Image (cartoon, rainbow, N blue to C red):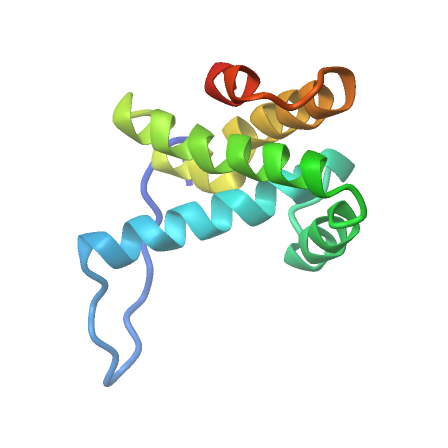
Length: 116
């Protein structure tokens, strides 16, 4: 499959095809998880679960990182960038690093939240 091409999924018998809202939710869910796993150059969802769980140690960093990761695929979708790249977590990975770094360097304020 070429980069940026939509994935072709085989439909299971008795399963309803996904609607646009369900597909968008799945894209955001995969993007969120894979953004975390990309930090360790992995695509594993298990790695993502471990990293998200570890992020709860620093709640402010976790919140700012997660907020950045949730915003990245939204902006990428609005710019009509490749959905495959969004799902892979490549856009969210960079946003996660910016959110985590900003939380560690700067005092969390409403202005900082708006900037991210």
